[in-house]
Length: 567
Image 1 (cartoon, rainbow, N blue to C red):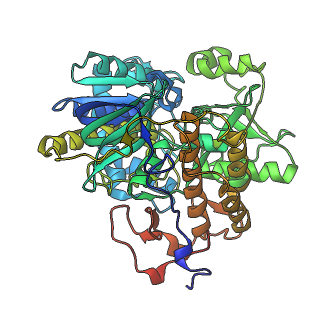
Image 2: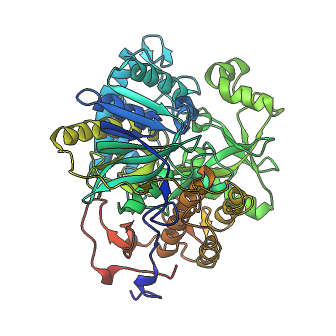
Image 3: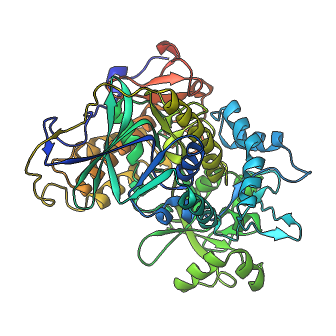
């Protein structure tokens, strides 16, 4: 098939440093060294730290306090085969089906088969899983053919974080530095050797490391209304891309079907587990519509349910549909879903009596920094894990409750691999810091940024790059994103954040433009069908044209099999 516009136009170029001007310099740069550096303090980062600390010294830096990550907000649970009526092959099959032809079989099998041992470890560490007598209670969620979701009420992420933070605090080999924003990766001879970071007082810190693991989370906050924390803007993906690492599957952004818009305008997720316990989706007129859309009804995978809701909203000209869980008794709701019930009460809603207004909102990025099954990226010395990584395990659409599990399984693997590589590494003769060290005026923190850039960026992404997309709309998004800078003019946290967010937004829009089909979480109204020719991954690297690969770690496919549009 002939591309409509040459491939060379379909690339996302960005400077290799986030601060404008390679000669930018600063009064002083503090220095630290470690074996393994981890950037990010969610479940993936903490798991990697604990694994690496078995044989290496670890420094973990994080922008926010440890309990303010997306991980701590996760409600649902961990998908794991524990029941004799279930099997690993069924969990693998469910994950592959949800992934819409792009989930990697080997990666999925790795995820599923390593899960039970990790759950046993968490149990030994005291994680208080809900139980039915002697057995761990198993929930059901969308896309799963069996009950296999272990949980702690509707606050599994917080319980998991509590468990891991306690272990990290007890480890003498893990040094945690909170309150630091990563600026750029440090490179030496084409190898990642650490990071340059900035604290709240604009003090620079260079952490030199034999190996570095990015565990910075996703990018849902690009869309404004999201289940994510406000800082989830794709920081780690931008760091890796600028340094030359490959990223993949950036077009696949999952919107969770059932998110409540709060009075403050933020998104609060109503867990998949509600539908697992029989919650129904209703139109404003009270009509249950999901059985007409998919035989699995409310328990279809998230991409299917999201499209169903958007279809009803468009047809009826409404902003929300309703989630009805009133068939459950109040005691059951308060015991199983206390967090959701309490949050609904704060919004003047009674989960036991009221149908709750919900709409899809940005939730999870399937794409990210391309890695192998040990978290290694295409840039030597750099690893990635968690939502910022793309292992191929989720494909075009993530199965419910596989995300925390991925953080555990691949966090452990990445931590072990990074520690092993660090043990074998030699210290380079010279390290090149991204910026020189001498006195300089850093400029005013204000006046150099577009007014309300978060609101403007979110409007572009929400209106033109949401689950229902078109070539015309995406082209408009690309043109509008050109007004956002890819470099910060000053050493200011917000300016650096904007540059990172603008870069990741461009990657998402460019990938969505190039993929001329609909698959999983990516739905093009002008290419509404799934095309078997597109059963492959789009991989992007700085200053290179995008390429198609059959699996994340494979060689590019011949260009004559490619399809492209202008970005």
